[in-house]
Length: 128
Image (cartoon, rainbow, N blue to C red; front, side, top):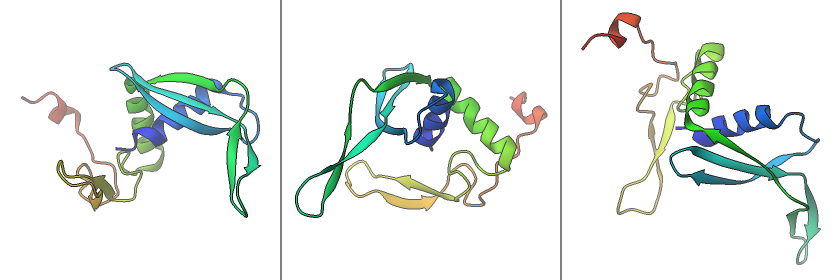
């Protein structure tokens, strides 16, 4: 699931207006509440030779994005684009076995690789 992508979109909306060049510097899980998104405007720092890095100055801007807000953003994305909100319309998902350390690509389990948002009928939601 693209929690990070949807969390960044919600964080940008909550922190608006943002200065030009603002990027996310860290994502931190906040227990069962959501994801704490931190960011700022970096400046390039020369390191060694032709290498350079990014240095964030001052206090980063932080906002807590709840899981309910992330789910709402996923639904909004699906309604606006018609694409699956879990794989962002790519049809691919990243999985990792418990014992393995290498993440693997597979078909998105929600849209089965079709890239389209699954259709949920109101009568199916209440059946049971």
